Image (cartoon, rainbow, N blue to C red; front, top):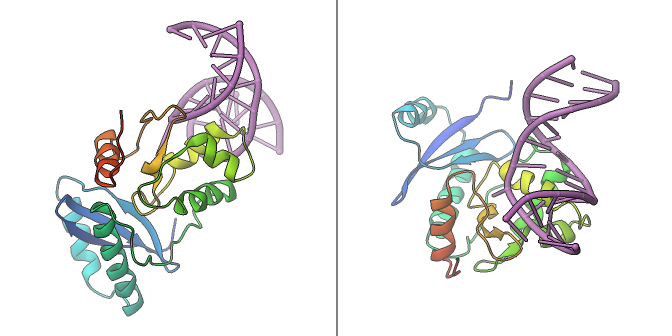
Length: 169
DNA sequence: ATAAATCACAACG
DNA sequence: CGTTGTGATTTAT
């Protein structure tokens, strides 16, 4: 269906993340998977990766490790967001300007994109976010500071928030 | 192409 | 605490 996506592993102390790259940039990021699918993907992708993708991957690796440490990434690779709808892109863009350590509610995101009532749709867009952590969907909480949910598992969301110094209930 | 079902919310009684 | 009001996406006709 899509262009040939290149998958490269990122080893962190929290496990091996998988980054997917298209011609446009970073197209997706996955939480550490168990099993050997990730190893096989890494091997198949190790060859014929262009220099540009390797540069992106270096930026992604650095940014991810910083984000996992609770600090703001220094630089991000170009993000390929072509898979999402216009609405989702606005939501993701709004989330990206949440400064590190800050949190927003779904309602605030909805308001900041000019659709104050679309809070539920914002939740849907968060769930459709292909690049967790770097697009800080984990900093989006419910209105009364509740956790809400998280695609990659609520444990991750809580862990990420705690590392940024955010106290959650 | 259209309609119903779903959802990581919020506000109100 | 259950209900209802919402907007976009996904799934089923």
